[in-house]
Length: 559
Image: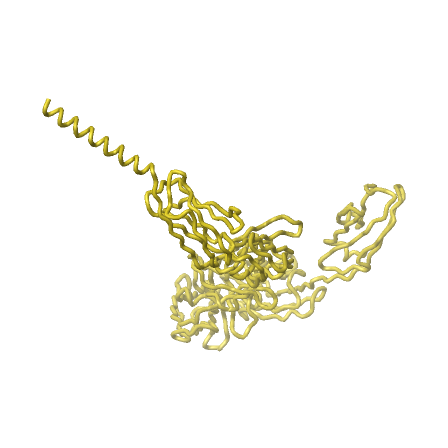
């Protein structure tokens, strides 16, 4: 391939199992696998470079064994970022001790240098082109005319831009230091104007110490107007005028006050689109206070807009109950604030994610189907849930079941037949947006309840037997903690039954009672009275024991 295609290009050779070889060009500008590939064989060859588009995108080639060589060629179209060059000239008496500084429009220094062997200041082809630059020579012993120049660099290398400066050296210089409150500093530029010529002789941003310092660069003596500028601040006063009579090392200190609008910054949070649904992004300030909650926009991004106090340090934390994010949090420091009327600077934060969604299935049975259970099986027939109702015929898994998924729902009740016997549900809407819902009908045998109360002196081992009218024993009841005999709602209703108390030691006021059993929730109460011989014998024994004790006491005292 051509020379401009080679730099930063990687060639990858694939076989049917994956990458067989990958590498960059050698000293001869060729991409050589050496005799490392299995042969004979068919391989796919791909050239990759972020700055280039290759034609064709890939080759499929048959590779014979060494010493045979298979040659593959690509053509490319590469984007090469253009560079520009500026040459600065000035008289010989200005050269010694002079440094030329080149800044962008935002006063970001991109180059500085001293005179070269040819007696010029030459950036070489190092500057972004096209571009607009501020060229400012500096020498503590010289004043330059003009103080700086603004250059539009339109013609890129091999073309160059040449400018010149004049100078007056060994002249006295003056220094101005401008101070203002911290909240006034961001975005402020201080302009210093020579009032006699109305020409701007210096401008700049605050240095690392938080002041605007001209150093010893101003012609002294002189009369100057100091004027701060900031699109979001109002200064008091708007400008100050000084008559500089004392030159360096003396310093003129100027103070300004300001009233500024709260600067705002912007953050954009990006996560994979498949994780964006139901996700929120929390933004905390440096003290840990939650100051903003973001939801995804139509593009699936989380955008604060120009609403965050700027400058500031923030912690970004995405949250989704179904997802894990990597990393869990990120810290972003906002330095570049939004400026009205300009395209805002956007800080971008990206997260990776893994999501496992849960679903919910609700089942409703008519209350006449109760008591009942609901069983839920997965697509392989495995029982996942055996649900109980809430007392009103509603059963739910809650948001605990894997989603999406296909499930079989089957109600189970000993006294009921359900229609249909089961249902298959394809659960595709997951929590918290939606859930699956299934209803069943039933045909049930209605049940009744008998409570038997026995008065008298019956012992606790007494039982109650219940027979149908064919003299078949239906159930046997034992005494409950409440002292009665309760069948609960377990006997088919609307039938006649024989209720019979049983204890061989006792007699009852009647041997049995025949009753017609209503359906629950009605309760049929049946009463019996018992007379038990063991109770009488117990009473006689107790009387004899008391009598004997009494006689022994009398004998003791009468001796």
